[in-house]
Image 1 (tube, rainbow, N blue to C red):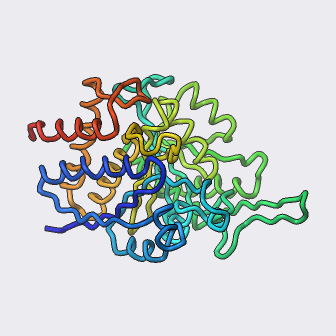
Image 2 (cartoon, rainbow, N blue to C red):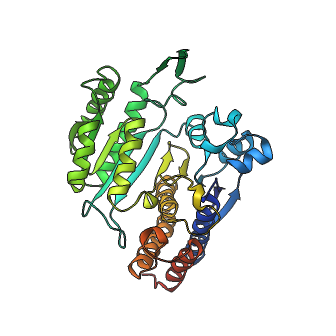
Length: 359
């Protein structure tokens, strides 16, 4: 029986609290299903600055490549010392150096969370390595230049290779869902860059004749999400547009604090909630861990498919059911109108996992 090696990067702010809560509930589910995990704690963010004078040290990057996957807490790179703030932040560095090209961000209504758009269940496929994100769209250096004190040039990069692989990932997911893909772009203005994105996605679409395809300009798409989020299934878009749309979608269906995501390539994957480090409530044991927990559920699904081991999917399902049951029973953190602490919520999930009668 395989033992899966999972990296644990606690991160900054509320990261240590919500990641610890996540590991605790997955340990409970794994024990119940006799699945073996080797949890490997690795430094990132402030912890790594203290130990290695680097928020994303080579030690951590090398160790992650020996893991099957990992969980990463949020980082507070805006507060790092200037010499570290000038570098790629930990998230961007791992996505760039390990070529985690797909950022997958679902937005789905949940029990106990107030959606402002009614029922919705969509997933955004965000290209993760280029586009308008100038800290990661160059092989060496940064795609941004200050020509004079008053003039800055920022580049967007779009390549056929990057668009093809994110498009294929999105269409493969659509085949498992409602068989509909929406391409989001700005080809009416950024005609060459996002025009290439649109055209290559359309070329890939021809290989999936069962999937219906439409497309929207990014500005129109924000309005459509607010008005009719339930109509969308899989959305594929470039880096910056995907970042904006996924935050909007997460808030529309309940809260950005609930929003999960994974970053993947064909070999490894990273679970990472869509929200930030919330330094104002760090150390108070009141952060909502659902986003990182559901990100880890996604990680289990990815590992299950990658290693053809259905037990991993069952671990994730058990945790997700525990989260939903806790919410239905009125156990909520303060941001959802409840009184439970981070650790209280994790304990409530573990209790429901242990008392569930398996089929």
